[in-house]
Image (cartoon, rainbow, N blue to C red; front, top):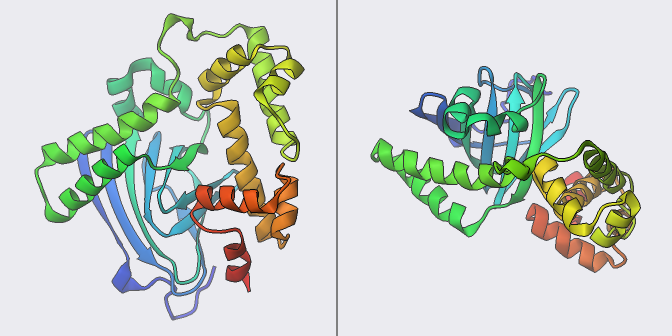
Length: 293
């Protein structure tokens, strides 16, 4: 982290606007521009635990918890995390203008609106935990645009609340467990599903179909897919894709070539890997090497 007299953040292009919509629910619009590549210590300013949904409106950045995961934020992507007094570093690439809209919901607010369902999404101990990083849906884009304009013009609070609830609802309904009585999973099946997740994490370079994964852990495809979603909030295929892309990003940052990263994450053809990487992060793999040079 630099400490010279010249600020790395352009003061004319930074700032946060916070609006409290409800007891335990707030929206924060943040914009900043780094003159040079920036790494700065950061702590979550929110008291207690809860969920943060971050919509990337422009640019990219990431947050790296001191003893935890890396959280990516990117243009056109939605990042969902749980938090409880996290401490880490914020990373902003040189010359990057970042515009982000965050919805912050406390445990109290989640309990009022979602009941006991919210508890499974929150971390058991302090820190931050990523739940999702995925392209922002067209429906969310419409609400985001309306909410951003509303914040900048000071429109009626009711309209802001409606748009915020719509955005939160779309994200949380796909992440929280099914409220039906059948949501409970037998312990033996749960162990197999956890085993399947470990296989996905440890064998990113292999071809891992749902059929193969199910046969390997002893579960049918449908039971594995449904159980995986209930336990981890996503499908095995989507989870594998996310992990491959994040691992590839780490490899590229370490200096590996695009083809090496492609083969290490299960792609036979680097061109297919490059297309998938660009769709996921919003920029091509070669952009990482260009930033470092």
